[in-house]
Image (tube, rainbow over all chains, first blue to last red; front, top):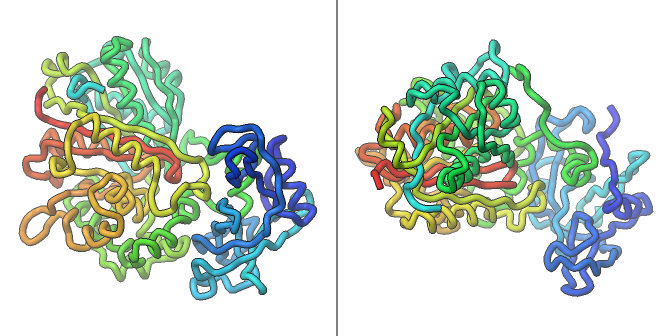
Length: 133
Length: 385
């Protein structure tokens, strides 16, 4: 079954274009300097429209997760992680941790992770893997 | 709002709870509404305000034959009804309506005439959460919890214990879906749903409904049931995406809503005799106890383990009876459970709850909407103004 994929909107198109090009793009406010996600054309902290897109390092740490034992059909049949990564730049992002066993032993909170782009055709999703794996 | 100017005079649930395959969603609303009207001796023509979530207030008013001068369709998830109570109280004080009916009905299990869950693939959650495979609340609402347990120093057994203690309350409730005693081991060994959550840490999925009728405290004296007055209320919203919660260890919406309600009510925590915290999953009572200020961060698990919320603690009820109907984990959960939390608060303050807390005078119904997305709090009192 085909993966259920996001439909970009005008405010988020750049993020998905970035993923397609292998870049994790965040935004930051040029007035208060806050980095934020998900995309929007203004700063969610101070309301300024003076914001810029920048390329993030793609590094972060595993902040929290569940291992879903009842996978949605488009994610296969095996239990898999649904995780939130705390990016080095500050924002939190939902993702899947791939490239390691999907077990509590392998998925340790605070372990370093890095982005691993996975192409699903129309959309490339930013998944994460243990750093260096 | 002003204290004790508005009261609940009618309150009831659907005639049946649990599995109701012969009733559509709109009929569950109507069944509960008719029971609530019977409870206080009113007819639809006596109602001049309506509020509901899930269906529109238009559908509700039309279906019951009500011509309202006030309609509230606030829909922020399972705590919507707490917000309806709050808005209705303000509306009654402002003269927008005199007698307001708030209803809930949901065919959570049988799905008769029920819509679909979730938004489209271009919504924010559709773009930035859904692609990673969450399947509704069991694999979404639970995502902050491993972080929370680590920060607070709680164990997965502490989560399990929440379900165990609430099942003891449910055992006293003939209408509870699950009444058999369970142990921490039973909960830990139940089928894994989304690690660390087993089946018994997740709420039930049942059918049912409930309704509340509010009117001014002055008029409330003339109704057959003991009025339950609104002492204070609160509400707030945070984010539609659990991944974007400001702090995985605490709900901002809980803190804001709870504080507002306490401030309005002018009470302190020791004044509270009875507490309902919407428990869609076993972690909610822990967050609720901390974010409402009943426990310091890191002390909620021990508070429950030491039986302060339990039906029995060294020969008498715990000091803060919590989720005394059994909660969403054991009583029922149709999808938007906030209504049942308030029904139990009202039963306790009328003195007619199956597991009655002796002498309860002040009760709090605290609700969550979405996955820490929204919150509503109502503080009730049975003492006349």
